[in-house]
Length: 230
Image 1: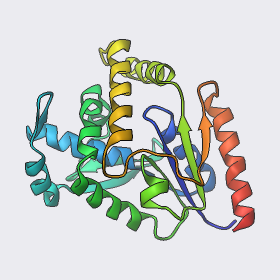
Image 2: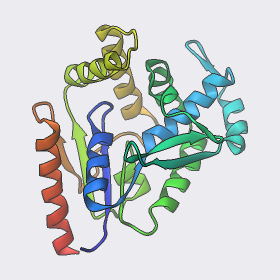
Image 3: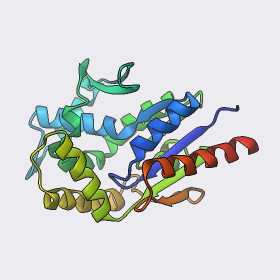
Image 4: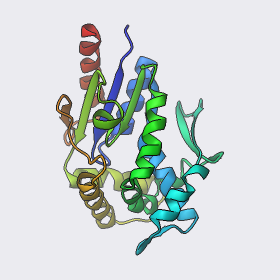
């Protein structure tokens, strides 16, 4: 089977990462969670007191970028790669609601996006990759053979995220999660640098009423159709 690049974009908590992991495993492709990269940078900013609810020292974060080393390391027990920040596994730390509250603000910074996009493009130079994020089909891989844009209602996404956090033992309320989802949507779609938009040649999937298996089967069929034409 010919190797292609699969770009999956969409709003927060639409299951992009879950789908991307499923596809990568099925196709034996490399999977890259770009959201984890931005989350790791947000975590770094929080660790170094560069960002808070009423404070964001963008200049200091930009100056610190050369000191931020990101790496994905495959975890055989989990079946996917985990995010490492400066040699430390931060996979658990970057999935908190606290990081979620700041990640879109960090992702607005053009210098941050430039650094990470460069790394992402290098990862995908040999194709056979599934990458998910906010600007994969529009900026990172504008020539990707398959582009998928995922969406669902804010309420549906908030409920999914709330359930996930509850299962991890995080003490959060549904209202706080919904507020976070709505705020991230606004920032992601209104930022000046690489806003979240649907690429002209992307296939939009509203998964509000699809389970994981139905979603996976639908996109896998799209992959098979695309591979036949390249």
